[in-house]
Image 1: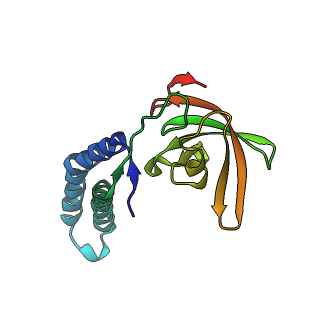
Image 2: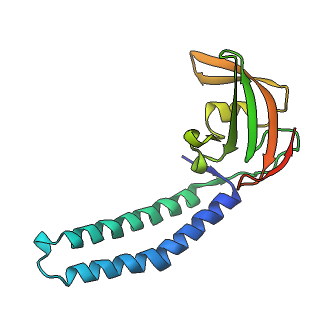
Length: 166
């Protein structure tokens, strides 16, 4: 599987890898050494906790490196009046007679509880590239889909600062 990431996502991941290798790794190795020096390893909880933390860090580094290696870089640029990555979108869901607002992001940053919808989700795929007033069909699976109307698009930076609205 290839993850669709922006260049900014990759840069943040590389910064985290560097931090984990230069800072966290050293701290974890020191914690293991200190715990090992306490003697009997068979009943040394500190030693096992330090080893677990060290292994978690190494696992996270491998995960991030694999994500970068297999990533497909996508542009976060879009036309001013169409839905793109990092845009905040308001849609009208006809079936529920309700509006929903969310920000369209890459898979790595998706978190539906915080209103961050992945471009690979059914809703993200449906609205990406469309304009205000467009009626699009959201295909959840082979037997269920629903229509939404795009009501508003706000071009925002990654940190959420609004640039312009449509």
